[in-house]
Length: 316
Picture 1: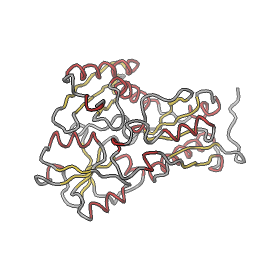
Picture 2: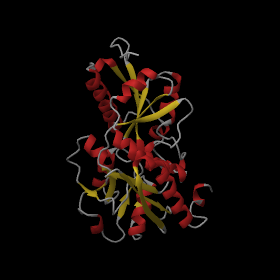
Picture 3: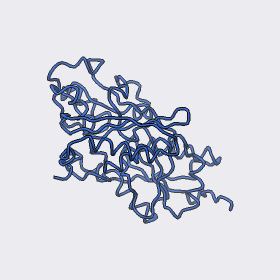
């Protein structure tokens, strides 16, 4: 069956959040599709959708609702036909999609590392005892306190510009951002030091862009096949199976990273208590085709190692 490409008069609609980073990811998706099929930009329309996580800015994310904070409204519009495909930061994505939706297209992964951002000290270890660090990530907070329980960690939400203003105003001495976001936004002027994953393991799927569609939309499915990055998909298969087995969300202190070398997938995982008082980590390797199995097995190893009340805070 011949692929029916979008008509510039009736463009395919790409749904996205409205942040500068989300828009950059949507434009990258559009540009890759245009290049793959020699289409003009007018063949696609970028549709901005405000999510719960975008609307509620005065409370920590964990106090709102653990899962789907940045996806629920977008997926509702995808199911209703208001948009034809949705572009997501994969670290924000719940491990299960609503019935009728499919997420199996990934763009080439960016830098997975966290960035330590400060107006003064260049390294995390240089922070003075009792210094204040701002972050909205429960994972980063737990990892930081696990290494430096002396530090004062405060809630830090907002875009890059907002966070840099807070640093200049002395609200905190340092914060963290994702290297992937800084790279995609071309923010070379932001003072940062990339943190090696061995020192701070990133969030599951950090640096990856995923594209979601309706399961029965064969036209969009055929189009997305042309821009899917196989290795990113293989890595995320292991990482998201690991996350699913831990019943994790973007507001759970879970870290994980898969790499591929010589036909093998190598997965490292870490779980922490929110206050950083306890941490468990391990790694597994195996054939690429066993990625999902490896992810689930690594999760079980960590769960078996933790105390029975390790995750009790999530359900209390």
